[in-house]
Image (cartoon, rainbow, N blue to C red; front, side, top):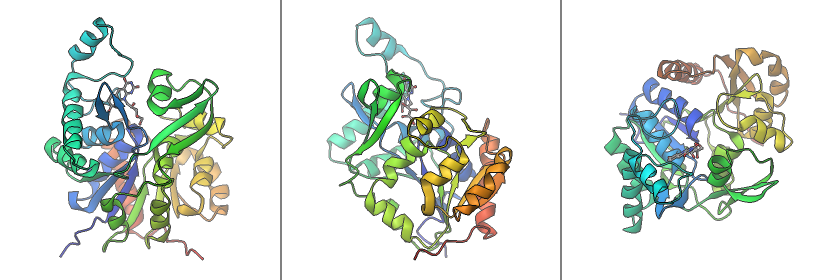
Length: 325
Ligand code: FO1
């Protein structure tokens, strides 16, 4: 009989991570996969509770996503936003007409006392997502970005300022006291778990908030299965978003070696692009196994191809769990 717990736990942010999560949802059966979403990007806007990464994951895995933008829905219209702009309202953060319904629904359920986990589960089910998705916590975490232009809330930095200001430091507000969601921690100690995959998301902005919860980090460190990261960088460049400039701003090497150094002993292995093979010896010196793949995911078929490679690495036992002293 199959275990009630997932075989794969994937930690993910939005766009890039969601692509691998889509691939994983195709590579393994629905009940084998739990995708744990970053919530550091969440914020209240226009009276609504917006969870960009949870939503990008749900739209991408259900096939309802806008593949060009990377966020939001396909077949979207913008009447609400255009009308709001005509009325002099805030239009810097764009909510499409169809997308708007999701935020209204979630905000209502949260106001009625539902948890973020249960609303995420309901929404994923209604959208036809064929695996489990949960927030990393039901407590709020807010990524705050200190830039040359002062401290900014995440979406002000990322969307309004187009991630242009130079970053001086990051703060994951609330992470000190936030507890990881029950679904997340239970899955890490559950029967039948085979691996934890860190999706190719921005380590600092998307995975950092999850790892900043002490209980989540402890649970990950004690999980008996390998933790495998997929690098979000190829030849020192991100496919989308400010990963390499963020890493550079914070004094890190903006390449797959820098990603491996950031995760350090938390990970047992990393999948990097073939073109970064020259970085492998230095990564291996950190005690981290290296596997090569084509990590680009321009289309859904590529997401599935990469996910199958990652699952193959796990099934063939190619990456062993490091023994933590
Ligand atoms: N990203 C943008 O660059 N501009 C937007 O106007 C925007 C709106 C938006 C609305 C809903 C949603 O779920 C996501 C949205 N995003 C938008 C994406 C989002 O801000 C970022 O991609 C993530 O927070 C980073 O993972």
